[in-house]
Image (cartoon, rainbow, N blue to C red; front, side, top):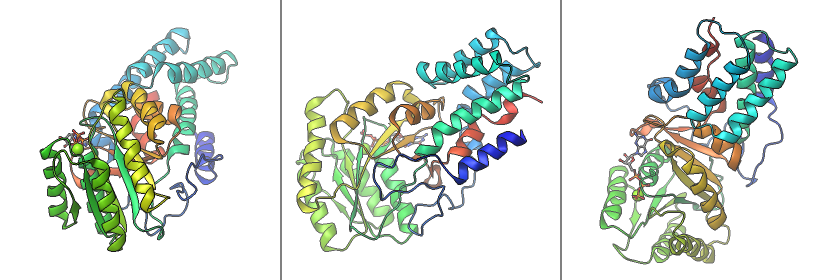
Length: 350
Ligand SMILES: Nc1nc2c(ncn2[C@@H]2O[C@H](COP(=O)(O)OP(=O)(O)OP(=O)(O)O)[C@@H](O)[C@H]2O)c(=O)[nH]1
Ligand SMILES: [Mg+2]
């Protein structure tokens, strides 16, 4: 255990070459910046409490697998692989990590379930750490523009509301753009969040051109020296190419006012969608070039493993996770904390 902890700590101190698609973002393993949305806002419940059902799908089932100190053999490893797949870790990744364990068993590197779990934790941590890249807001350019995208019901508007509150607590001046012009209710929902936080919402009503709403909002935000402009968009299926083109247009129109905008194109994924979320993410990325991911609803029926699959396959910064509907339920993603929640050392038994 001590050996693993040493490696764990070392990895924390000196993360291996971090993929940093936008140089202005930095890993949260580095000293926190004043403008970062910090995880230091008191969270009344631990991740483990918020994710109780999700934890059962992974930690619970692996604990059951290792109860009674089973012999480490092919059958046990097959079952471990199946459990990971069931927990949404994905077939590719589950096979890869378990195959590495098989190698280790063959070479007699592990003699106890604990050794095996420590090796698995190490592999999974190495996948999560590079995507632990917090969203933070440099003083320039102003406004920092966030474009929220995702399929229907993923949690875009709710995440905007929570993010707005968090940013206000950090004394950032926020403006919202009602770029979801498909449903009147969508504009109302955003206006409600705006009113609740006393934040201006730029809207043109139902059926307006989304790109035009966003253009107006950016112009107004620039004039008013707003710090952060968050643009809501209508949910769309990744397969609806005309709607995907609308997002491309929104980006193009923004860049007329600020060639560097949007500074963050954030895909919101519903964590309970499982592997389907990966397909969505790939298509959104191909269409609009994502710079970050938020995974919501990890408090519900989600199995949690999707976070490992997303980190492994997309290698995009995982900015935020949603574990409920309250403001404090939007949290920064922390690799170590997440791993300790879904796959604590204790799953290996005593
Ligand atoms: N339990 C839970 N519910 C969430 C979370 N995030 C969002 N929701 C709920 O998911 C539902 C859909 O959220 P919205 O924010 O409206 O989703 P959207 O992506 O804006 O949806 P469209 O506008 O239809 O595309 C709402 O009932 C939210 O309260 C979360 O982290 N946990
Ligand atoms: Mg919405």
